[in-house]
Image 1 (tube, rainbow, N blue to C red):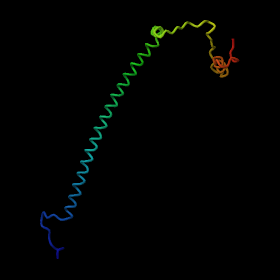
Image 2: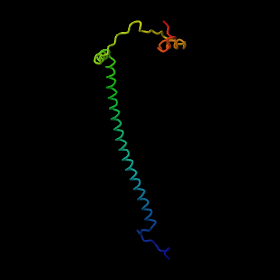
Image 3: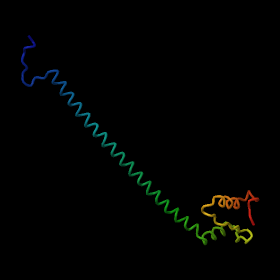
Image 4: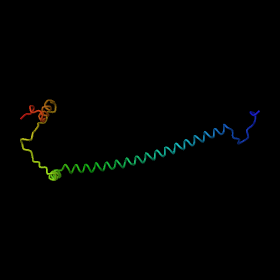
Length: 128
């Protein structure tokens, strides 16, 4: 006879409670997922900001190194460094200068011959 009994309005049955519980769990899960995504986005933003700062520092360091290299390549700077290190260099004599011919663009053998002339380990390939 319990099957024919009518439910009163607002009566909580097991099915209604389970349905509400499932809806509540889904909503809480969605909200927790949103919070987790927000926290992850914030963490990625901080990492991105740190990487941008590192990139800016590296760009500044590269600019300083380029300026230092430009100064170091200047003859006056080189002479000052050599004087500070007590390095004495003189201009090479004409006998020490080896002049190489430009290779003919289409002839690969002439380029190999010129490269062999420049190789100090192959005295037989040198030409006067």
